[in-house]
Each structure stands twice: as C-alpha cells, then as structure tokens.
Amino acid sequence: MNIFEGALQHLKKAARQIDLEDGILAQLEQPQRTIQLNFPIILDNGKVEIIRGYRVQYNNFLGPYKGGLRFHPNVDMDEVKALALWMMIKNALINVPFGGGKGGLEIDPKNLSEKELEKISKGFAKALAPNIGPLIDVPAPDVNTNSKIMDWMVEELNGRENYLASFTGKSIENGGSLGREEATGLGGVIVLEKLIEKLGFKKPLTVAIQGFGNVGSNIAKILDTRGFKVVAVSDVKGGIYNAGREGFNIDLVRECKLEKGLLAGCYCIGSVCDSAKKVDDGIISNEDLLELDVDILIPAAMENVITSKNAKNIKAKIVFEMANGPVSSEADGILNQKGILIVPDVLANSGGVTVSYFEWYQNIYKEKWDLKKVNSKLKEKMEKAFEEVWKISKDKKVDLRTAAYILALQRLNK
Ligand code: NAD
Image 1 (cartoon, rainbow, N blue to C red):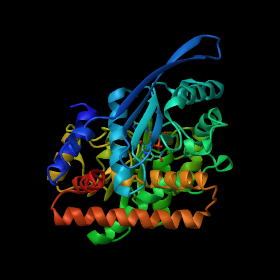
Image 2: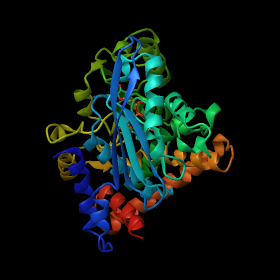
Image 3: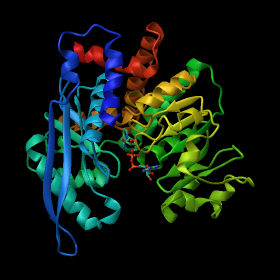
Image 4: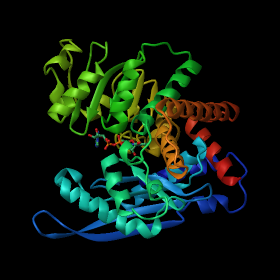
C-alpha cells in the first residue's frame, strides 16, 4: 500500500464511525489542487540544473492551506499528498483556522553549498509565488528546512501586502515567533504529560528517540528537564544507547552532535560518555533503537519506519509519533493488537503548526508576543485537543488515531 493510500485508510476508518454530509468524504479523499513545478538554477560549477518541486493544496474548508516544505531526495507526489492530508486533519483537530497543504523539493541539501541552497530556496518561492500568500497558502519548515530557508523564501515575496505572513518558521529578527523552534517538541511533551497522568504511569519513564533534528533534539531536551530518562537517540547515521538507563545529559549530547556532526560519533567522546557511563553502553542502529524495551518510543525522523516487518518486535508501551506517518497503516493494526498505545502524529506533533498560527497572527496584526504568552497559549490548545481526543476515544471505544480523525472530520463536516 503506498503512503497516500495508507493515509486514506485512516480517514475512511474514522468516517465510518460518524455521519458525514453527503459528498464530504469524497471531497476529502483527494486534494483540491496538486502543483508540480520545475525551475532552473545555476550551480557553483556553472552548470544549469532543473529542480523538481511539489505543493499539494489538500483542502481549505477551514482556512488557507498550511503545511511545511521538505527538502529530501525521496520527496514525491504521493508522499506530499499524504503529508498534506495529515496537515488537514491536524489543523482541524488542533482547531487553528487553516486547511492542509504540504510541499517539497526532490533534492539532497547535504550535497549543496549554502549559496546553491539559497538560490534553490528563492527559486522555489518564486515558482510558488502565484499560488501562495497569507490568505491562500502559508508554507513552513519541515525536514531539512529551517528558519534561514524561510527567511530566504519570504525575501522573494518582499513588497507584497503582509508578505511576512506568507511563511512561518522564520527567524525572530525577520518576523518569526518566539517559541516556534521548540514548539513541536514542547507541544509533544504537553500531550505526553497529560497522557501519562491519565494512564497513571509514574516517572522516571525511559524514552528512545529516533531522529535528532528540530523535533527529536528539542523533545529530548525538554523530556530530560522534566524527569524522563532519555536512554537512546539517533540520527540518520545511527545512534547511541545508554544501557544503564540513567539517561543521557541531552545538553552534552547536543553539543557533541554539533561538534562531531553525527550522534554515533558521540559515543564515549569526552564528557558525553561521562553522562552515561556503563560498560554495555554503545552505538545502536536505527532499526535496533525502535525495538528497545523502553516505556516510550518516539519516532521523530521519517515516515514508515515501523512497518509490518518490525511491528511485532516493538516492545515500548507507548509509541508517540512525533514524525509524520512513522507507523505504516499495516503496522498500526499490529501495534493496536499488541496493546501498544499509539499517540498519532496529527495530535503529538501539532504544537509546531499551533505556534506557526501564532506567528501568522502576530505578523498580520503587527503584534509581538512574549515567550510566556506563546507557551501558555500553546499549552491551552494542546491540552484541550488531547482531552477532546481522549474523550472521543473512550466514548466511541476507538484508538486515539481514529478518535483524532473523528474530531477533525466533525469540524470539517461542519
Ligand atoms: P530535521 O530535518 O530537523 O531532522 C530530521 C532528523 O531525522 C535528523 O536528525 C536526521 O538525521 C534524522 N533522519 C533522517 N532520516 C532518517 C532515517 N532514515 N533514520 C533515522 N533518522 C533519520 O526535521 P524535523 O523538522 O525534526 O522533522 C522530523 C519529523 O517531524 C518529520 O516527519 C516532520 O514532518 C515532522 N514534523 C516536523 C515539524 C517541525 O516543526 N519541524 C512539525 C511537525 C512534524
């Protein structure tokens, strides 16, 4: 089953639980508009390269399309359609006035110079310009994109009315919101804290995190400060595991990753090793990390990392989806049968788009909120969404993913 078909399965499963107006599901089963674009750039060596990009404007019943832009060699239309569908569900359930969208470029930014990356980002913004804007479609960062890239893109739209509100996830100096960078991780922790309270789980709880980018490193850091034991972390090249289970000092791990460039390089180097000293500590592969016997497993990298192949080996009590789509729809069934509680991406990682909404709002109304205001509004929204999803799940006796989709569908239907 391809990734978009998998996403549709969840949508249809939830739709069977409620009465939707005639024709609503048929409209939500496909994107309103898909854009595939190609544009040229001149590389540092003087050669011209044609870059292929996508933007899917999935649905705008609730407001302008909203969702990130990903730079990755595996980006394709099916992936972007699935990610855009999930944005539609996420924005509806977290109750921000946005529809769903997503986009990306089929490039590997690691093979590009900073100058080439700037040209490509601006070229993408220029190619997208006729189809985006504060009240039409508002992109944001995603995998391999960040505030610097958003700043370059917004610069391309300079001069248009309210042009700063055309992108979110910008740098603070350029109209970004305080708290946006940590928002996805912090939003996740707010939901996780509520969940363990409901389940009666007591800290310290052990956590393994796959992915150490914006989302993975921020959630690791926040969990570390709130009494969780982060015992394994990884990036694309592999990870480190603290078998002694006292947990890593994430500040030290972050410093080391910055210095060495990869987490596996942080095993027993200087002070990082001192933060988790046990003989059987070591380097761990991404595959093995997923199968660790921990309380909470947090996939925070890419989609489809838990599939029908490895789902039976997952030992965590909770799979907390900070990445989008990390559990395939087949694996979702297997984990549910095993009694593993899955907190779905559309709820777990919705803190990012929530603060993106605050940023868009501040840009439009020319306001500047302090961090306290941003974080307290984020907390309010995340806790409300969690309580609503939890209640639907109990009332209708469905898993949390189905409950999350039901809540979103009810709003879209209305
Ligand atoms: P990022 O580019 O900052 O980091 C990605 C991380 O994943 C890196 O550490 C990378 O090394 C690692 N990685 C990449 N491929 C991997 C693989 N095959 N195995 C293991 N690790 C791998 O991206 P991000 O913004 O942190 O996004 C991570 C996930 O969270 C994505 O699914 C994204 O869609 C989702 N998400 C991001 C945000 C946000 O605000 N950035 C919001 C909601 C959801």
